[in-house]
Image 1 (cartoon, helix red, strand yellow):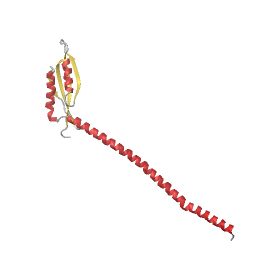
Image 2 (cartoon, one colour):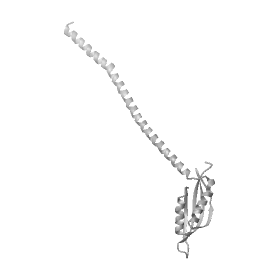
Image 3 (cartoon, rainbow, N blue to C red):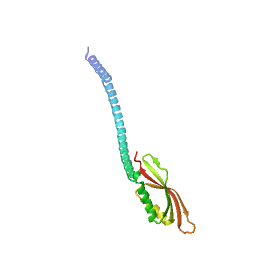
Amino acid sequence: MTGGLRKTVFFALVVGLVVVGYQCMIVPANKNLADAKARVDMKISKLGEYEKATAAAEDLTKQLAQLEEAIQFFESRLPPHSKIHEVLEQVTVIAQKEGLKPKTIRTLTLKDNSGYIEQPLKMELEGNFKAFYSFLLETEKLPRIMKIRQLEVDKQLGDEGQIAAEFIVSIFFQDEMG
């Protein structure tokens, strides 16, 4: 074999070895690298989703804490049912202090709601309109949750500024069973 042929065969073997090495080693390594990069990218996107979910869970935890505070606040304003006479006495004292004459006070059917009880009272008061307005303002200041509904105010004939008011005041209490 001559030197030029030997160099050409050697060069062909080296080029063949490079081609075979590239096909057998570099191509599979690049494929594995691409697969690994795809898995890492997928895990990074999942991590981003988990971070968003964690942030949302923290927000929900804060909202839950705020709701629990609100529930505690409203429950603190709901007396036990056994104290209905105290609330009724407070309303009556306010009416008398304002110069109103209670004609009737009747309890209506108790409404049992989930978590609280509503005791409606039908009241009829007579007196000066300004005194009645002051009565409403003072009743609103009581540390209890109350609601006035079905309010009817009629002017008394012959007496300027005098009214007869008929309304239902609902007083809310804690449900001692629930």
